[in-house]
Image (tube, rainbow, N blue to C red; front, top):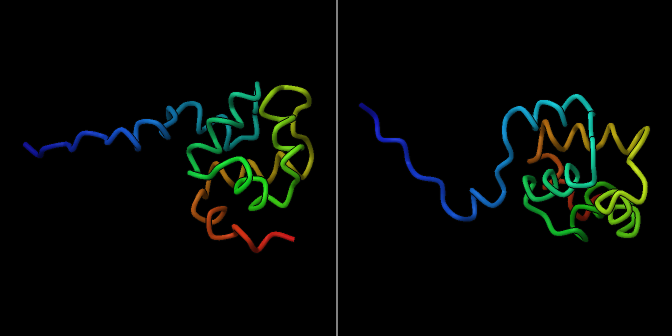
Length: 96
C-alpha cells in the first residue's frame, strides 16, 4: 500500500473542493467567497491577484465582498485562473 502524504497547513489553507473548482471552471461564481477561495487557491494576495488579472484592487475587492459580481471578460479570466492557476501566477507583473 502506498503512503499518502498529509497536506501541509499551507496546502490545506489554499485547497478548495474539486466540486467547487469544477463549478468555478464553468464560470459559476455564486458569491464573493468563491473569488476569495480562487485567489487563495492560486496563492496570491489581493494586490497580486488583481495585478495578474489586470484589474484594479478596488474591482477585485468589490467582487470578493459581493458589492458586484464579476461579469463578461472578468468571468472568463477567473475561469482561466481556476483551470490554470500557474498561468495566472506567471502573468503577475505582466498584466497591462
